[in-house]
Amino acid sequence: PEDLNRVSVSGVAYEGPESAPVVTLFTKAECTLCDKVKDTLKQVQETNPHTLRQTDITDPEHRGWWDRYKYDIPVLHIGDKYWAKHRLTPQEAEEALSAAARGDFSERKGQPDASRLERG
Image 1 (cartoon, rainbow, N blue to C red):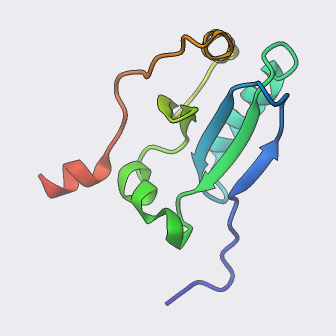
Image 2 (image 1 turned 90 degrees about the vertical axis):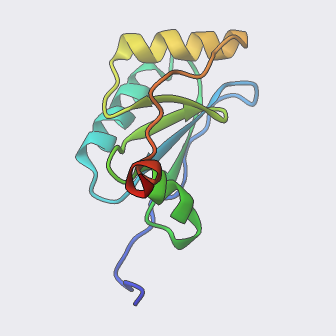
Image 3 (image 1 turned 30 degrees about the vertical axis):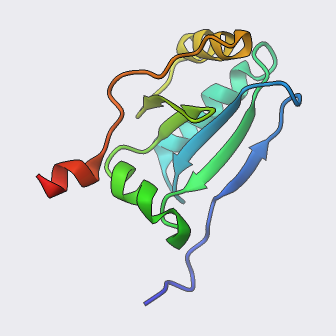
């Protein structure tokens, strides 16, 4: 049964310039680690402009992300490339966002996939 009290946190948290990198935060309501990552990204927004989009992994339409990331949020992507999970320092954020702005950000290793573990 669908939880009628559930609040989706999907959507654009804030927008940077049109040419700025787009960061996706895979999250859900009441995720304190996600809030910390969001605060870190907000801190570097002025020096490393970016757009922050949130994908709520508990939304029915995001079931595939739930299957992959349910044990690991917050998970971050830059564009469509896996970036980080769990925590983020301002220095890590600045390095990755400036690489993305230059067009040379490459996907990081260690992308979680809970569904693969559970099938095994």
